[in-house]
Image (cartoon, rainbow, N blue to C red; front, side, top):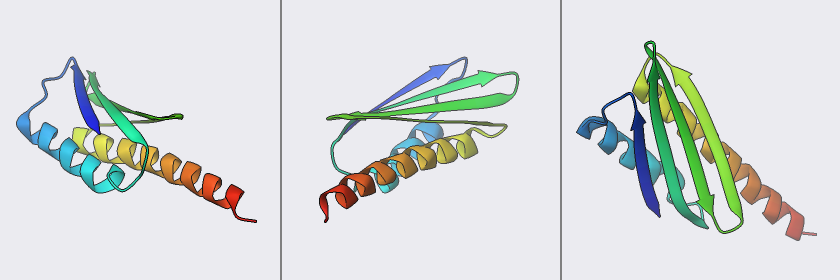
Length: 98
């Protein structure tokens, strides 16, 4: 799994980068078929926007969030993406059980 971090109007510090890598590893590492995770950080008038794009084989999930704290936005956007991935996984597993 590759993680790409892009910053728009914001400098990506080592603390933010470490927080993202730790959070991605904890939340998305146990889910199969994930090949690429793109995280876009944006700052507009003291509001931090975070967009998470998770891509894999036959898989595309997006999670977005905005708040006044970058770390909170990162956590909530990753949680939204994880929730969508788990829902897709359960849907596939429920579909095959009869």
